[in-house]
Image 1 (cartoon, one colour):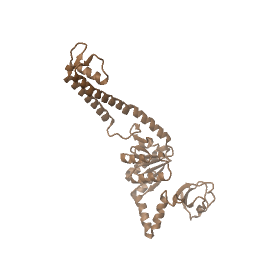
Image 2 (cartoon, one colour):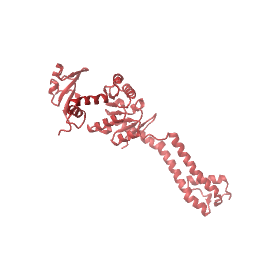
Image 3 (tube, one colour):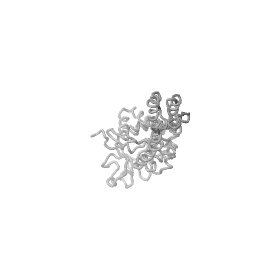
Image 4 (cartoon, helix red, strand yellow):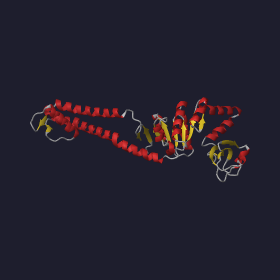
Length: 343
């Protein structure tokens, strides 16, 4: 199923063309004229092989008329080839030219009319299906791994939109089953095409901190409710990303440093942290809202897992703090649960 979007001022469900529209159209017109010119030249050189049933004289106008009628139709019979060479030229040169010219005309009509109508309709269908979905802006190494991990966690790839300008990146994401959007995520039109206002999560991994922050600013202006996670590579830019509207700021270098530092005391700390982050580890971290069954229980006494942290009225409360002795309605819980690797 086609799940590729292209964004310009008009939106298309198609791959980005190598040529602009005007150049593609001009190339096709030039090719059609070149083919007609070959037929015209052949008929003019062998005009003695033609017979005009009206006045018996073959002029250049007659040759031009006969060429155009023969290339576009099968002719009217007023001018006909009478010699073997003229008939062979019509059979083996003009007839293939006629077919190629018609294919060019039909292909142009399909590209510039029928396919675009189909693309607009297909895009509207895909967009109607996008609700509470995940948008990944930037499909480099971080975006690629994010898509893989989401799929491993059971997220339907059809509910994931990957935004990038790289054809290779979009092809790879499309093979995974994701919806791909060929566009600039810093532009309003691109994020609106990805239905950012209806999205549940936006993951930004543009590869450059300035681009990432600009995408976050654009997305936050278009949607106040979407959860935004951003990859920032410089410590100095982390506060800027949060001020721009990112809910979560991830610094890959800092996380790698934590794993390296943890490994100095032994290999198991780093393994455990990796286990928590991966979908198929022995344990996994899960964030959820408190349920009626949780209310009144201590954070460490949940029935679903080991509560390690809760968020209440914007405050972060650890499992060892007095406020964690009783879960209250409206709390947001972070817990460690059984991982997929344990059956």
